Length: 217
Image 1 (cartoon, one colour):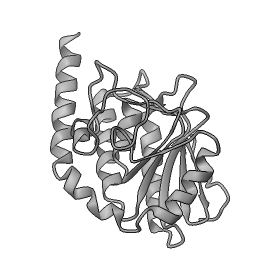
Image 2 (cartoon, one colour):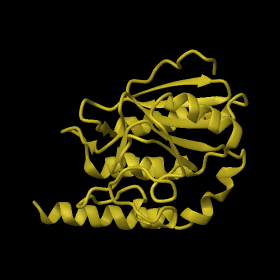
Image 3 (cartoon, one colour):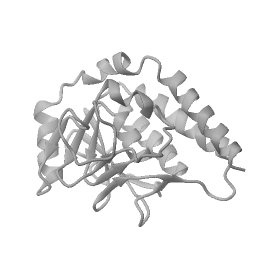
């Protein structure tokens, strides 16, 4: 992988900057993503994991949004979408390189679940993150409190809902320097301590979601 953008993606952009493989989520005007975004993120994670020149993998968003909710296409099976979410959660947890979330903007609901699946969450001072009151987790978000003590939607605060807080001005530039200088190369080895029952918890979340969804019909 070179410093040029990797072609073939529609829902993300992906390139290498120094030793960092940067995945940029392309949400819609409301900050929402679709399940294909998760498929393309898995592809880019696989490319970055296999590239010896990439030492870190960072995930960020566009403009002032990291990611918010997910929407299903009319022809899309909800069960298939949930299987994609499970696949992404398990695949990203198995990547043997540090994965960092760069919350350039709001990370809400599914967006915050994606961030929680990384090893380090770095947030801009203007980025709100967490779960809205009635949100049902689908990607392991119910184990968030093992990592941060407040998963409710709020402003960023270190140890409360992120690992590192950076001012909005030159956020990506400062975050890049922090990754290269302060993030340990083996930080990913600590994932299992936080996510040892990730698969089981996701099954519980998704079964509960399907039950509630069915009851509303």
